Image (cartoon, rainbow, N blue to C red; front, side, top):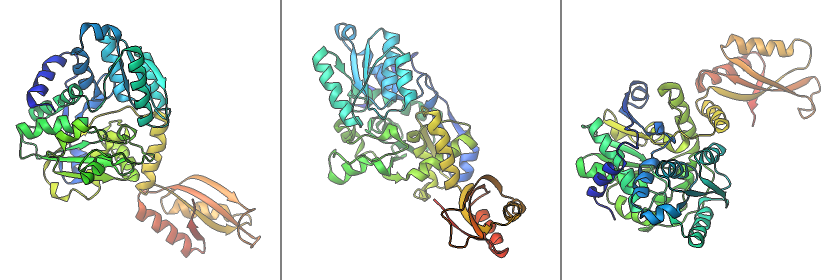
Length: 403
């Protein structure tokens, strides 16, 4: 367990080595959520996430002998990068064990920062177990990415900055995976602003904090694929849970579709690139589950920006689909000359834009004079798509959903 004084001491230790990130008011996000939104941009840290705070605080407290031997940690990416970078600045060798599914951008960045990278296991749990084995074998200090007291205290320094930047805040929405960030920031906020509401948000596919609350203790959960890979922790930390459980006012989960849509909104409206974990606070605001925060001053922790560019492109497309702006359906048209031209003309007249057309003659209906055309179109929203399909039907073109 840590105290508020530990967080204040951590701030002194990390001063000068950690970026004092902005906490900006966002007009567009405020408009779409009905709240007064402020974004704490820790995705602007040197390694792209808040993890540098805890890493720096933990590394500076090691004995000179241990600093010489080095450290090791398991991480899906952000803690690994933070440890590698801050270790490099301090001259401390760092080894990181990453699951085999870890985003390539995070693996490459760790290697560029001089860390020894070991890829092991299909999930974080297996990587962590292997990390402890190596630590014992080589005499390295294992630094837990979310449950080490020094890590929690370091993450809590973000809360000190938030209170300075938005002194009259009503709520803070915090992503939770292992719960280290949640524990540190909620302890700071509740100490300095006891009436501020703390909202913990999880990806529903990896809701380990909710499971712990239900069981009354950290409980291992089954892991499922998620865009929020930074939150993919099978069991919350015991220290972090003990701190956070009594400080959190509300815990909610968001779906993969909501996370994708939040990433898209942040790119389009806030001009910020964030990873899935960092998009969950906005996803929570857009989910309809936080109506009591309407009109309130709310801080979103955009705590990481390390998303693989290839994943980002797919996520943006998924967000467009969720938004009703990228749609796919199959139309049944005449296979005679002019059939496709008539379909394209109808789509154009509705104001939609054709992105792709694929003919299906071999696996269509028994009517050999007809052809099935799978259309991917760009529309304004779901209502616009419905109008397009109604217009096609009025002109004798039947459509149906296609996968």
